[in-house]
Image (cartoon, rainbow, N blue to C red):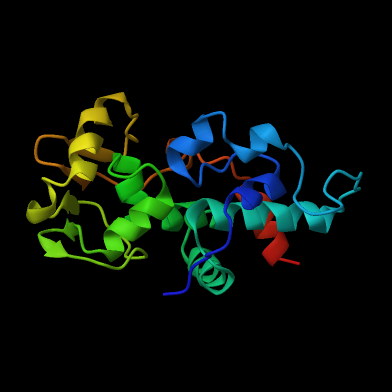
Length: 208
């Protein structure tokens, strides 16, 4: 499955803010945004006047990069959101949040969405008792996402379980640390999604 394989810290620098793409590193002194708070490249420190289209493009790129989605797939998600009843921007975020790799990250089994994606691809998780290795798999209310029984003794998940008490779990998810599983209570509403994205600006871009 296609994915971005380049340096991720430059993505945060390009957007001018932390996107938390590298987990714990983003909270430490080694964060590139904190050390070099300007866009990458030879002209990164120059002054640039950004147009309305440029602002819309940057917001779309930021949304893609936060959730680890490439252009074609993101465009498909937008088409799906546009066809659903309700507010298109909120529908788009709801679709992105319901991806399995995002749910694994939100539950605290991984320190970043990229790590969650890798763990899912390596067949460490089940949905309703069945192994699912597709990061883009969309969960539904009532689904139970759990660490595969044979993987629960791995150091990665033992350490994650110890740190879960410090994580803030979204209201639309329910976590059972002892069973190492989480239940999807409902699809998230906009006020339950803390992603710093102006989804309406993304909608305006696609409506041009």
